[in-house]
Structures are given as structure tokens and as C-alpha cells.
Amino acid sequence: MTIVMNEEPRRKVVEAAGARLGGGNFGIIAGPCTVEGREMILETARVVADGGATMLRGGAYKPRTSPHSFQGLGVEGLRLLQEAKEQTGLPVVTELLDVRDAGHVAEVADVVQIGARNMQSYALLTEAGRTGIPVLLKRGLSATLEELLMAAEYVLKEGNPNVILCERGIRTFETAYRFTLDLLAVPALKSMTNLPVIVDPSHAAGRRDWVEPMSLAAAAAGADGVIVEVHPDPDSALCDGKQSLALDRFAGYSERVRQVAQLAGGAVPAAL
Ligand code: PEP
Ligand code: MN
Picture 1 (tube, rainbow, N blue to C red):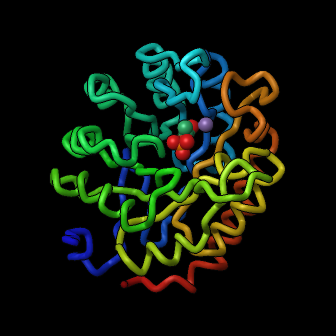
Picture 2: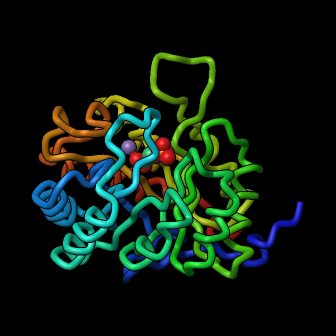
């Protein structure tokens, strides 16, 4: 296996529109699963910016299990994310689902997300690499860490060194929660690569009351950040409402997660 990512022994710091993630910079990426409309994304962006978020997340193109579910607002969703960025200064993280949308996504995204279902879509990874924009790469539902790292290599190979790896839960025999959050992936990946590693507790838990404990655990495990779903009215969300935090919970959540990250920081070696 050829690994180019380990040539640099220091921990990688990924910079996106002024925000830094990795190498001691703990990031909180927050926002709705999906951009549903103007008011909801602007309100969410304002609240998470005030509550200490580092970046704003929001899908304009959604990978839905059913083709009959809401697929996202597309270009209009991207335009609304741009407006949210202008109002708050938060860098935008949004998913690239299809190589044909790369141009539109690259105009707005400060970080391009590649979703779990596309972790091994090699043409998409190559295209994401070619945008030159930092890439947030989610672990596939049944992918090993080696497969995740090889997927990251597709981006790096295009001369794009800015990849953030994300553990978001994997498929196991357990059905009591949406996915099994594999927190050992955090120290394991950090021993294998210098890339930042973040955790998505929302998609693993599938339930909002389990999101904070798993976020605290991720911070304690040495993660470089979390990506978390929040919504102004979770019960009426078009996508992933059950796992979304309400806006009034966000500031307290963010403060507690940062406290644990600070406590854990000293335990993570600065070099590999
Ligand atoms: C998401 O971030 O909303 C998402 C669809 O995540 P994943 O690809 O991890 O399922
Ligand atoms: Mn989601």
C-alpha cells in the first residue's frame, strides 16, 4: 500500500476560509442536515456562530435512502449557504454528491463533504481533489480504516493535501442505535496518518439525547472536532430531525464539548 499522507510528520492543520482545524485546533461544525429554506439556514447560522461553531454545515444535495425522499434544494441551497456565510463569516461545509455538480459546489463550499455512501466513489474523490478545496471525507458504512485512508489518497494524489477524516458510525450486528460509533478509530487513525480526524455523533446516534455524550466521548478520545446536526424546529425537519439538536441547546453543548477537548488535548501527541 502506498501512503503519501505520512510524509509530513507534524499533525496537519486544515485551513478553510480563515478557520483552522487539526493540530490542536478543535473544530465544531454545526448546522442542519439539509438546507430547507432561507429563514431556517440564516437563523441556524446565526445561532451556531454565536454559540461557538467553527464552520456551518448544510446539505444542498442529499444522499437519501429512498429516491422519493426530499433530495435537497440544489443550486438554490448553495445560494442560501453563501448568504449565511456572508452574514456570519462561518466557512461552509456542504456535500458533493455527483461530479456534474462540482463546479457549482466549488463556488460556495469552503470544505467539500464526501458522504459515507460515496467514500469509495473514486471518480468523485478525484474530482473533489481537483477542486483544491479542503475535503471532509466520511467513513463508509462498512469501510475499514485502511479503506478510508486509501479513499483519502485519491484526494491527496490530485495535489490536494487538505483532507479531514470523519468517523460517523459503521454497520454492525447492533440495531439499538442507527450506527455503531467506532471511537477507537480516532486514536487508531491518528497513529496511521497526520490528517485531522473528526467525529459525527449525530448520524451514529440517530437520537438527539445521545449526541452530547458521544460528542464528549469523541473529544475525550482526541478527536480534532465534531460535526453535529442542529435545526430550529427538529420535529418538523425534512431530514434527520430525530438526531438534530434544537438551537437553544447549542451554546451549552458547544461549551461542554470544548471543555473536554481542552482537557484531552495534552494526551494527543503533536507528532506521529
Ligand atoms: C450528512 O452529513 O447529512 C450525511 C448524509 O452523512 P453520512 O454521509 O455520514 O450519512
Ligand atoms: Mn443528516
